Image 1 (tube, rainbow, N blue to C red):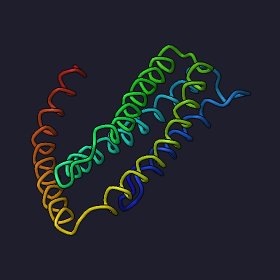
Image 2 (cartoon, rainbow, N blue to C red):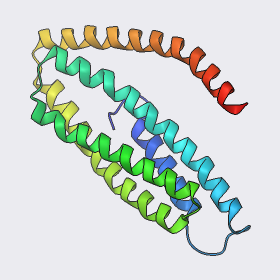
Image 3 (cartoon, one colour):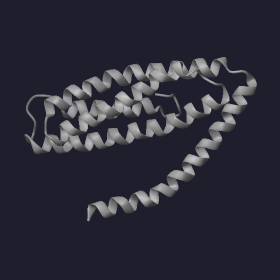
Length: 172
């Protein structure tokens, strides 16, 4: 994942490793529901971290493309990996919801392998693109990123209110 501040990569990977620990085979303190319940909680944490990664990555990639046109062929593998991460994450949620802990463990292992590779590829792309930018492009990148972050912050504040209403309606 893109290396920003407190490393979103580490947060996502830590959350996924936590799920793998919860899904480990062997005797559990309370069989069945307790392990499933804890796995669901761990999965929610992982989903929050992955969602944060995607929200962090999207404005960066957009700003990079605006500042210095990046050939789609360079970004396409990362976008494909994002889709794979989403598909595997959905499968993980389905397996845990169905109490298929063995299947969930297999999916979580696949996710871990994809995430480890994904982290390296994103970092390499960012370093290569930013390293090759002309000074004027760096300035355009900075401006584009600031606009996107401000817009995304404003948009998410507006969505946060409506999202809370949606959740409270769904809970009733």
